[in-house]
Length: 87
Picture (cartoon, rainbow, N blue to C red):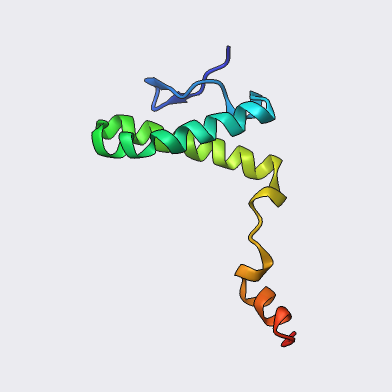
């Protein structure tokens, strides 16, 4: 099992790039579910580690699924202008 070290002391788990697509999605869902707990009840170090792992997984998700994170065109200025016929 490959681990990534955080400041030389805290393991963040398996590298996101080594996870399957399903595992990346599952890990992100879990991190989002535990975010509030880490923020409100975790130590400063635990919250920092949570944040670093979340960013690592989000970056991997965006790399693998760029279209999955693209905004709905109707939520952008250009998309709204086009829908309103203002090209």
